[in-house]
Length: 318
Image 1 (cartoon, rainbow, N blue to C red):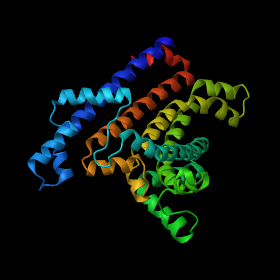
Image 2 (cartoon, rainbow, N blue to C red):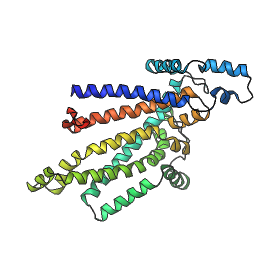
Image 3 (tube, rainbow, N blue to C red):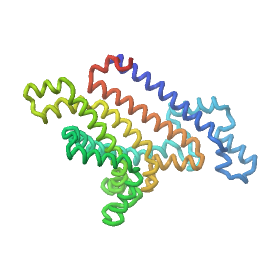
């Protein structure tokens, strides 16, 4: 297990380094001059030169990358050119919304998808299976922003049970804050639940065909017990993989939903920073989100080792 963990940690560090390099290079080749965007096309050349110097754009690319990387490692993320505040403060403020939103969405998605997927597998080719698969097909086909609009029309405009947008803030109390996050979380969770339910169904069906499940049934174990004691647990590895990817997406890919509900989260922050060419904010947020994906995948690998000890030997890497 120690060797397995060491290899994964080294791979994690290398991946994070490569991700930071890719983010920097991609943003460096973007067209347009950030100083011109911020000051306008009619700005004087000496004013533009002063701003470029302040932003460090007059330094060599390699020096800028090393300075930025050093800041990431020490926690000095720099100052936003647009907002005039530390980028770390901006990110912490937005993470306080985006992280709970992603957690609520993944909990709702998992709570809905796994029972539906297992039920569909247990009643394969019957009415329950066909109905669940029809529901998941709709969930995959309809974009989450359409779900968001429909939820707003139903629960905010017509029933007036929940707010249509905005964020009350955690200082307003737990329930007022959660009320503003509920509709966005549901809008994010439904398409993810549809995907996860289909993966769960396929994985459970594959596991039900294994010899050890048939042996358990032959020894007298009833169908329900064989399903939950043997098939479901061993079918969780691909399900955990999808859950890890979904959590990364929910944290990093909520730009549209956050704009629909006018939520000041990470997605909205990066959208505004790109529009304003605030490169330091864009770089820091993008590398944070990329790092989150890498770390979540690392956690998924660790979950593999817990669910299936055979994987600790590294044979699956061959």
